[in-house]
Amino acid sequence: MSETIDSARKLITERLRELEAEAKQLERVLKSMGEADRSRSVAPKSSRKRAAGKRRRSQAPRGRRREQLLAAIKANPGARPSELSRKIGISPSQIHSLIRKATAEKLIVKKDAGYSLKK
Image (cartoon, rainbow, N blue to C red; front, side, top):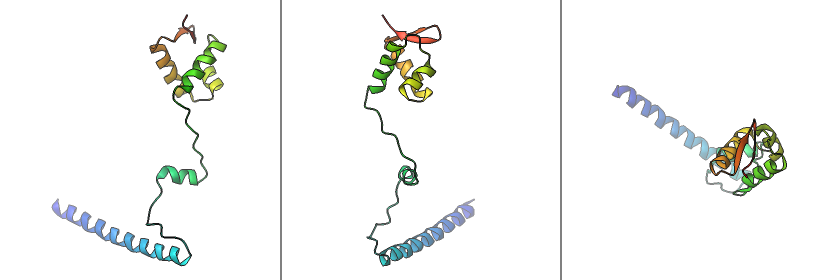
């Protein structure tokens, strides 16, 4: 078993040396192209995704979604979660989470298949 571990360590160490050599070579190429020293920093995965064309939506300020939920229920008493999620523009999982919290806070009550404000 220790032979297997030693063998794996050796392979990993060799691969790391190869990667370091490749990184140095790439840094030299960048320098020759006039690129500033980037200190071999690698962007986090989330940044790479956005750079590939995917845009991250901005996050709503704290309490905004709850206000939107209550306003939507006030305007449409008895509205179902699917209707509320479309009206507010959020996913069904988000709306269910908001409904669960608002119900626990006794702000809304279930009315048939939908929800209404607590009187």
